Image (cartoon, rainbow, N blue to C red; front, side, top):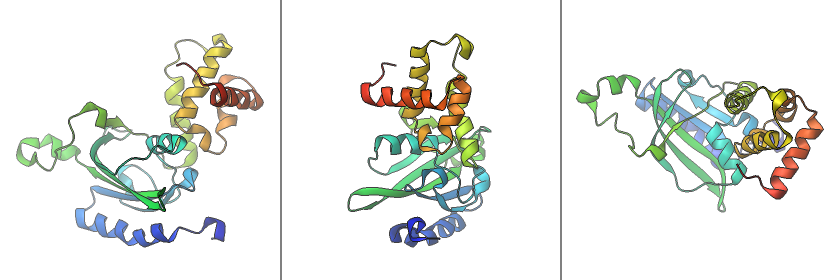
Length: 219
């Protein structure tokens, strides 16, 4: 690993927490350490990755990409609900690491509470999550950067009500705006993939991105 890819000392010091927390809470608890300087393969340490299907070098989640795109990081996120692609329910917490005020990464704890919910009357306290719907989100997890890219792009394209060939230029720009807000264009190869989906050249997609970022788009 060269100096450019060297892990920040603060993040490096957090690596022992990953295995330690996972060992404490058991096989139903995934613990993930993210390095925000490498969004395409941000996972630098992970335990019990079978819960979301991720491994070391997996990309950031949809929520993380969106926050990174907007530089929108607030306080630590405690005890919020997410769901995996196969419908497993997770009770999650995210703790941010900062260096001189700048967020450089985070430690995520994802406890699979699916079975607990089924037995909620018995162990309701363990299964407790925030009831506010604003804290209940369906997260997008990807085991590889390509899988993550395909999931995010297809999530937007699945809501199109007509074939791409019938989309106006304005409608295509709106799609690009939505993808940009999600942080999709932080992923290598995303412009080419979106261009293929829109049946336009990659230069056209770059122009759409410039238009979105310079002028803003009304969604």
